[in-house]
Image (cartoon, rainbow, N blue to C red; front, side, top):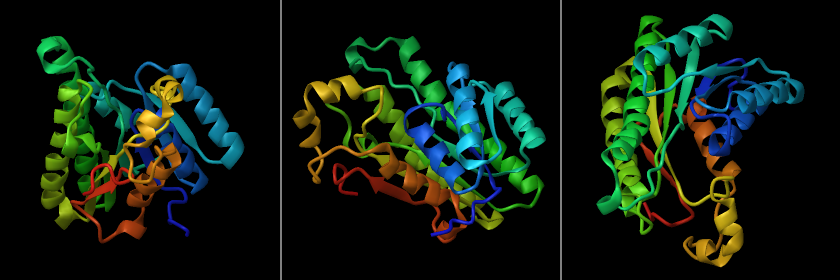
Length: 253
């Protein structure tokens, strides 16, 4: 299916690795111009840009910003507009996970989780809406939440789970605010997936992870990314305020 994303400009925050990288790759395969936001992986992001240009022949850009920093977010959008053009869609994928259980969680770790996962998402969404409205353009915002927003975690991730639940409320409210402008806002709730962050733990005890899904396996990042890319496209034109469960039945939502 042609998603009509050819030459559309799409920003993916935290796009240099993991799920974000896979989203970037599928967007490029669809012909989109992709802006890859990074905070600490410049070489990885630059390498991905070269790979996309070589493999898919698309324009792409590695762009630095700490998404929790207001001025850096604004500068990121300025750079994208200057080098790629006006943004059509944004995927808010950047995230931070504070692992200690609540009783052992420091205030600094808690704040970092909130700053990146909620404040950062808010700043990127606000900038997107302002610029789309200024140009009277339609667009799509896709927020990456988690099945843990509905179920919680049994492994000491209360702060992370709280922020991912907050994303769902924000997604619904923003969708109500901007629907009249032709801006669609949706969320994706991934389940467990095989990424470099948890690969070692999965490989050490795959059955422990596989049995948590009704399908008896964890996801490939492609299975989550394809849904996010669809929501970036005009094929999802009548979807807004939705929370799409892609958890293999973990959330049953």
